[in-house]
Structure formats: structure tokens, C-alpha cells
Image (cartoon, rainbow, N blue to C red):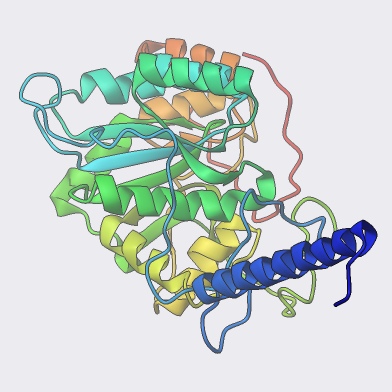
Amino acid sequence: MTVQTPHRVGKTLTLVVVATYCVLMCLLLLRKRKVDDTAGQTPVTFPTDAVTTSRVLPAFDTGPRRFDFPINEPRLCAADEYSNPSVPFLLITVQSHASNKLARDAIRDTWGRISRDFFRKTPVRIVFILGAVHGTVQRNKIKKESASYRDLISADFVDTYRNLSLKSLASFYWARQFCLRAKYLLKTDDNMYHNVTTLMRWLEMENTTITGGIVGRLHINSTVYRYGPWKLDESLYPSRIYPPYCAGCAYLVSLSMAGRLLEASQRVPLLPIEDVYITGLLARAVGTQCSNNFRFSEWNNGPMSDNICAMVSGNTFSVHHVDHWRMYAIHRNSQTPEWCKENEIPKQRYSNSRHLTQNKTTL
């Protein structure tokens, strides 16, 4: 009979522990692969400098794309006998970031207030959508803001510019889950000023239907950038020209089209250029194209007085690149149409270029 020394016993136990650990890790990896992978499909990957996510982007699964909402307002669109007597006709989803509270407050006090108060008995709802909120201090601030206004949701991905495609898909998913009875969805950003009154009149006029299910500022034959903030590597998109798409600062989709685009995202590889991906590639995948409407102004090109008067006259639905303090100035002056009577309404200036320099003029 061989007597094992303490040294040999310790070595044997170490080997047993290591072997057990390896077996457990293999089981975990196999389980993850079984959950995440879809047969015959390849996981979507981006260059390390292109996109950062708080979760691994899985292979495109066969079911509807799902998002979790750590902060949610599931009853935002519900009809209430006293405060919100009707379900929404128009849902406005404003893409924002946790740090942009000044912009959200400006929207609530200006064009967003019109939507919330003037249309209280008419169905319009606004919801701000954020990505994941990190840090205890920031999370507490957002929770406090959410409790105060009940108009804010956050989804489970890192909130970066290159993740805006995920943010739009999350807004579609949320609308299909919690605001399904709305007819239209306006996707916009927190640096936009909207004339909701004019937009609503246009939508309701003679039962307006949106051709193709998407409408906005159309871009045709736009060149793919291989550098700068809108760069796209050839490995992700080898073509030199984008399909027709609408500018991402503001576009309108029917709720049924939002559902179709969401479903198409299961089979169309994700790209970090939001407007191209959502209104270009996904739209093409479902056999449609964004319809052009020049009243969705893409750029704040001229003097702010031009934009105010165009807004008052109904020539535009929106103005882009508006700082939060300018929103108050636009709102204050747009409430007095007489202010524009002595100003000739200028012809709107538009451009298909993403690199148009803004005129830094003041009111």
C-alpha cells in the first residue's frame, strides 16, 4: 500500500479543481452558443473603433428583435379618463442622451409643451429614449427626472453615436409593445424644433396617407464616407453609393411600417449609420422607399428669423441644429405671427451634403 505524502495529495486536489473549472467553463460556453447563435448565420461584428455596446451583438435571430427597458413608461400611451382621454394618433420619439437634460427641458417647455398641453384631448405623445445609463449619480438623476415627467425610457445598450441604429430599433420595439394603437411615429433628435400643430394638420388633412410608409428629407445617390464621423468600412458596406434614404434628424413612419422595419432588421446586417440603415437598407428590404417632403428641414441654414417665419407660416415642420436656448427664442417669437408680417418668407435652402457649414447667426 502506497502512502501519499501531503505534497502529492495537494497536487492531486489542485488538478481536480482545475479540471472541474474547465468542465464548467465548457458547459457555460456551449450554453451561450446555443442561446445566441442561429444556424447558418454569422454574428455581426464592427471594427473596434466603430461601435461599442453594453451587450454582445448576437447573430440575427429569427424572432422579433427584443430590448429591455430598465426605465420604462408602459402606460404613456394608455387612454385615461381624466388626464389623457384618447390613445395617441402621433407618437414622437426623441433620441436623447442622459447628459442632455437641458435639451429635454427646453423641448418640454417649448414645442413639446404644445404637444403635451394643447393636444391633451387630442392624441399626441412624446417620449425621450436613452441608451443605458451608467454611474450611480447619473442613474439617480435620470430616475428623478423620470419620476417628475413620466416621459423618459432607457434601453439596454451603451449610448454612443454609433449605436443610434439600435436606439431607433429600440424605439420601434417600444412603440410596438406599448403604443400599438398610434397611427404614426415621428423619430427625431433633441436638437430639433418642431411645429407639431402644422404637422398634425397635415397628417389629419383629408386623411393623409404616407406613401411607402416613410416620409422625410430624401437623399439620393449619396456617397459613402470612408473617414470622419460618418465613416463606414468597406468590410461593412462595400458599395460606394448609399440607397435612397431620409435624413435621420426627423422622419415619419406609420406604426405598421415600423413593425416591418423591425422585422427586416433580423435579416439585414446592422450598420452604425442610423438614417441609412433604417430608412435606406431596411426600407429597401421591405420593398419601399422614403417619400420626400421639403417641410422636414434638415439644416438650420439661414438667420433664425427665417426659420421662425417659415415655421409660423407652415412652410416647415421642423428646424435642425437648434441649441436649447434657441428653442426658447424660437418658441417665444413663433407665438406672435405679427412678428413675421414685416419679414418676407424666404425660399427654403436645402442641401444633400452632410458637411454643410451652419451660419452662426443670432436672433
